[in-house]
Length: 468
Ligand code: NAI
Picture (tube, helix red, strand yellow):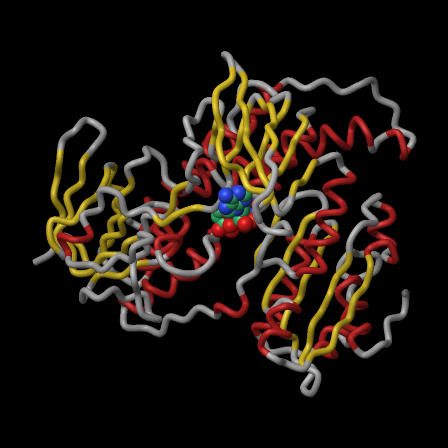
């Protein structure tokens, strides 16, 4: 007899959701988490704290530079960074406690400590006090997530050379923050510190920012960020970061293709060159679970590893490292274990960059369609032609819908603009239901709302936009 039907290792968005769904399926379930709080990277040091700082810093920026345009006179708004950080920490605390509450409600046992395999059905849990307990399980779900990656010549010390873990908790506004990597983390956290008064220089290896995002959107994004004051050096690599005096850093950069280098002086460096799967201390080998050279746990399309009864989901397996992708997998794997149908539609996973304006996308980009030789149509609509965007003083950006040239089926939707994070949901639903652009165009959207940009872009696919 095993202690549990299901033991989940890791209490992040993948793991805790899998545990709750497994318990809902009537399986006796435990979730092992060693961090001290549930919610994983996302709730503790990722999505949530960064969004709190993005929200607060955007308010700061608007109060200082946006109010006057609407006839609101305020004296200069001052920054109280410790209070801003406390607001962020309180938000995180409330949410992680909320997950504990959900465990209680669903009768999931929360085992505090770091889990490692003794064999495929036996897990050792090492608590904070150093004491070890052992649990047995019929099924184990590995949901151990990911950790920040670095590059040669750059050592993250989490003091001056920081990962996102520390960039959300600095005790002062940097004078000059050099961000290595123009991806999601670099641009979100770069935006936070830029708004709070730092000089920010982003160094990106490729010749464009946010690889993976639709090229036209990325170009517009680059233009807008530069206008906001962010310095962006694309096609440039960092070769070395060295200490210079007590508080300084020297960042050596050179063209990615080779050539003369230069040195940037900074007081903080954020390393945001991607994340790597985390299986440290998991003892995957003791269970015989195959892990790739890059540390990813190999699975089939039903999240089964090579070992019967051992599954893996989230950042530790292939695919985009996104909390909502992990959550979908968590629900699906718990259903598979319970003998039900578990499915994730990987073609309809949205991605969002929470800058101002936001950038969001789902499905194929124009580059992907070109490469695949797919015949497609494009419909675009600018936010400046939308009444609600004008009222909100957010006229930047556009919605772009890509649909199949013959069937009109929506293949991808890409947005740069205000509330893109929420607007993309309609596109995801449309794609989930195999909608055509015409379906969206024929759907009544409330006026005045930002969502009308979606309807108009869908109309534009057939060259029939009304307001542009
Ligand atoms: P990323 O993969 O988004 O971006 C890394 C960037 O660093 C790329 O543009 C890459 O070309 C560049 N790079 C790599 N090596 C370099 C070098 N030597 N010099 C200069 N640039 C270099 O990774 P990021 O931003 O670290 O995020 C990690 C993960 O976390 C991603 O999978 C992301 O999706 C996820 N995440 C998602 C968020 C969201 O959904 N809003 C927020 C934050 C993170």
